[in-house]
Amino acid sequence: MTDRSLPRRGLESAARAWLAIDPDPATRAETEALLAADDEQGLADRFGGRLEFGTAGLRGALGAGPLRMNRVVVRQTSAGLARFLLAREPRPTAVVGYDGRHNSKAFAEDAAAVLAATGVGATLLPRALPTPVLAFAVRDLGASAGVMITASHNPAPDNGYKLYLGGEDAGSQLVSPADREVLAAIEAAVADGAGADGGDPAAVTIATDDVLERYVAATAAVGGATGSLDWVYTPMHGVGLGTVRRVLAAAGLPAPAVVTEQAEPDPDFPTAPFPNPEEPGTLDLATALADRTGAALVLANDPDADRLAVAVRTDEGWRRLTGNEVGLLLGWRIAQAAGPVGGVLACSIVSTPGLARIAERSGFLAVETLTGFKWISRVPGMRFGFEEALGYLVDPAVVRDKDGISALVVVLSTAIELAGEGRGLLDLLGEIEEAIGRFDSHQVAVRVDDLRALGAMTSRLRAAPPTTIGGLEVLEADDLSTGYGGLPPTDALRYRLASGARVIVRPSGTEPKLKVYLDVVSDAPTVQERAAATARTLEALRAAVRPLLGL
Image (tube, one colour):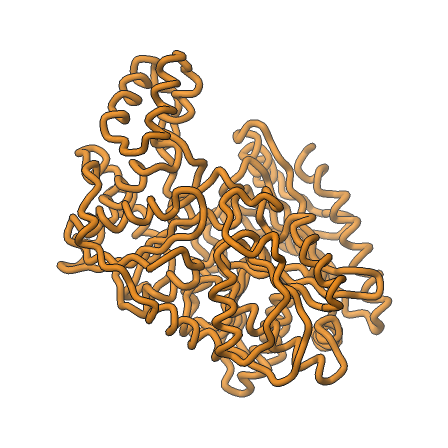
C-alpha cells in the first residue's frame, strides 16, 4: 500500500489524474506546484502508494495525494465503506462525527455525503464533538457504522478517519476480517472512481443535540460525589470543554478552573505542538493555574477527549500519574464498587500486571488483550478496561472505546470522596500497594532511520532468545507473533523474569521505533523497601535494553 517506487511517468500520471477529481483548491495548488517543479521526491511521497488502513482506520499528514489525508482520500474511503456496509445489509446506516482539527468538518461532510449518495442512511453530528460522543452515537442510534474524523493527540499537520462498526460489533472499532474486507472495498472504489462526485449533501441528516444529551446523562451516571474540591481542567486546545461542563453539571460535580489559553478548539495547538498529555510540558499551563488558584488536582483530556491525564500536588511539587497508576486507581474503585457481582478487568498486554492482582483479590477475572481498544472493548463480561497510554473504558454499557470524559468523572468523584476523608489519590495508591504489592513500569523507545532495522532486532531475539535480562533469569519467553495464549498474532516478544519482572519488545504500529515495556513488582514488607526494590530492578532493566537489542 505504500510502495513509492512508481517510475517518474507513473507519478506524473497519477498526480494529473488526481487533479481531475480533487475538489480542494489548497491540495490542487500543492499538486500543481510539485508538477511544475518536477519534484520527483515530493510526488513520490504523495502519489507513490496509499495510506494504510491501520489500527483504527486512516491517519496521516494533511496534503495532496493518496499518501496524505485530504478530501479525495476521504471520499474514496467512504465510497468503499458504503460498499462494505451494503454487502452486509440492505439498508445500512452510519453516523459521522468530527473534532476541531484542520479540515475535520469538510472531511466529515464529504464522508456523510458520499455515504448518503450510495444508499447508506447518513447522520452527521451537529458540530465538532469528542470522539467518545461519536462512539456512543453508533450504539445509541443503532447505526451500522460510525466514522470519526480525528487524529486524536497527533500534531497539528495530521488528521484521520476512525471507523466503528455497529450490530454484532456493538460500537467497537473494526478488527479482522472486517478490516481486510473494508480495505478491499476501498481499493475497488478507488479503481472505478466511486465517490469522486462528492455524493449528495442534501441527503444527509443532521443530528440534534438529543444524542449529546443522552451521552451526557449516561456519562454523568458513572460518578458523582458530594463535597467540594478545587481542581483545574484543560482540553488541550481540543473539543472536550463543552461536553465536560455538561457532564459535570449533570453529575453534580464541582466546576473546574479552566486553562484559558487551551480552552477553545485551535487546530494549530499553539501551546502544545504535540498535544499528547503524556508529553513533558503539556500540563505546565494547567499546573501553573493550579498553583495560582490553590488547586491540588489537574485533569486533562487530549484534543478529541478520549484520553485522560491526571496530576496531583505533592510536597515536592506536581506529580503526573502514569497511565498504569490511573488504571490501577480506576480498576480498584470499580472492583470495590461491584462487590460480589464480579466480572472481568481487562488491559492490553503492555499495561501493568497489577490489574490482574486487583482482579484476583476482588473475585474478578483478568484478561489481557492486544494493544488497542478495538481488542479491549470486545472482552466479554468486562467491567473495566484500560491501556497504559492514558486510555480508560469505565462503562462498557455506554461506550465501547476509551473515553476520557467518563474516566474524568470517576477520577474526580474519587478525589472528592477522598478529600472528605482528609486523603488524596496518592493515599489511595498507597492503599492499593499495601493490598497487591508495588508495581512500577517504564518504557524505552528506540528510534530507527530504516524500518528494516526493527525487523532485524526482533528476528535476532527470536533466533537467540536471552536467558537473562538485567541480571534476572528469563523464566518464560513468549513469541506473540504465533498468537500465544489465545491472542491473535502480533509482532511482539514477551519475557517473564525472576522476581515477577516482565519485558515486552514491540515495534510501534505508527512510528519508526521499537518500544520496550518494563514492568517490575515488589512485595517487600515496608513502603521504603518496596520502592527501593522496584527502583533497583527498573534501573537494571533500563541499562539492559540496548544490549538486549544488539545496540
